[in-house]
Length: 138
Image (cartoon, rainbow, N blue to C red; front, side, top):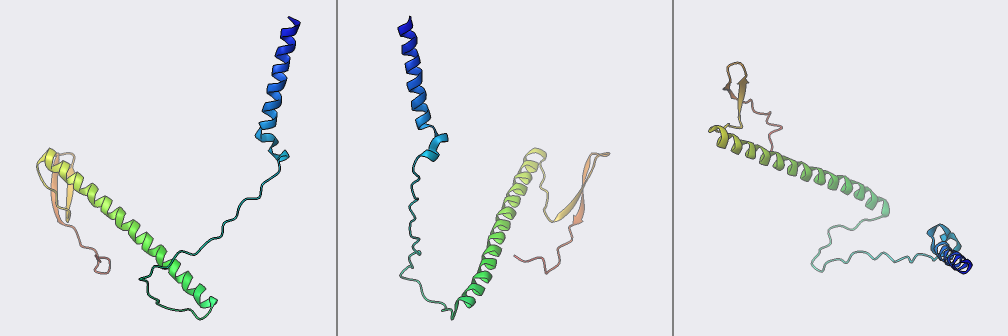
């Protein structure tokens, strides 16, 4: 029985030693390796590209870069709004389809409607006022 106890103790000691030597908590003991730094290479210029402008100095280029970033951000916002607008149009088309299938009539998008709960009627109130010409682009 003593031999079994000594054997179990020895196994536990060896297992503990292996666990501690591989534990990440003791990683500071290991020699740290320097991370490899790769050189950043500029993107290759396509053969069919043409030179548009050459900047005279760094300040001029930085000024242009700031304007370009602002312009690109505006394009991203415009594209996002267009996608959102298209999603809303698709949602409206789906609702129109459901109304047509379930209730048998088509609601026009340029008309105002009033739902009267007391009489259980939907009334057409006429054309919706159009937005000012300055907002009605596209």
